[in-house]
Image (cartoon, rainbow, N blue to C red; front, side, top):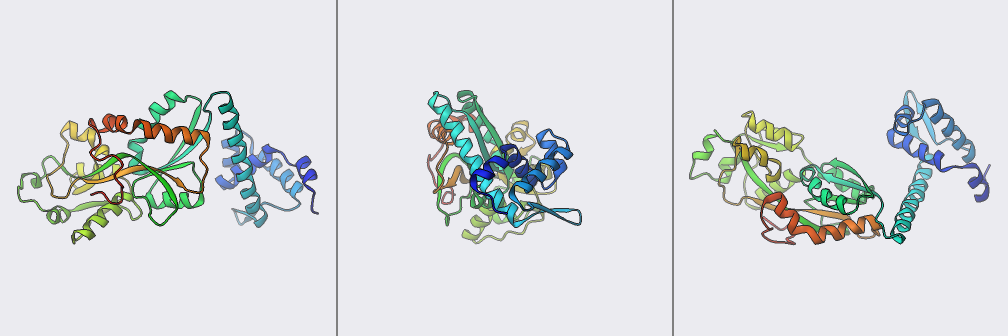
Length: 326
């Protein structure tokens, strides 16, 4: 039975739509119940009422696996638009009262997780009514999230050129060679880049921006990249170097504590540091919410201050394009 819009409005509730979206995203009734502070029977009851209102199922089980139906997929798209409109309305109403208020959904590549707190600390002091949700991903996942328009902003370094994106570089990302302080490489005055790369190199997984930058640099300079070990995070690689497994190229910001303690060192190596930039990125067709606009304006106004806080000095080349800098 097909209902009119008026009938649907009488039969549906925002709570049902919220529960439906949470079940779909969590892929579980029980996890959705935990997320929403409800019992599982309450979640099941709300989904049944929703399905009765729509006249068809939105979920189905195959074995023990929960799947969304074609009707559920269409509903999910509609719910996304409805909730996005409500969020924008909330922000615009707050703006009429002279406030910046609402949710800010950020995705940041794993290297950026070291600098995002510095960025958010000052922003949230200025706009305390903003609620931030941050997800840490690798570069490949960040590009996927940009394509799916799942976040308000993505913070990444190696920005894809082939997409219609608005990009604001806001902080240098210095990729440096890293060794343990007792590594014999530190004593070599004739150390070449290929010697370093051949010294049991530890490297990130495919899809990582750090690995992508290093691969590009090696390709341009006709150097061979023969990693000894692949690890899934910069933290794991850093501890691998500390444990004596080999050498690495890492963002300087993630090894600063170990540099200060004298546990790690940066050998002098021609071509380094590799200079990239962390950037705020969002699709060009996307209209920023008032909260996003406030963050973008804050980024533009505080770039030099942020750089000084992270690195202790002003940026060497403000506005440098991340994909062109070495």
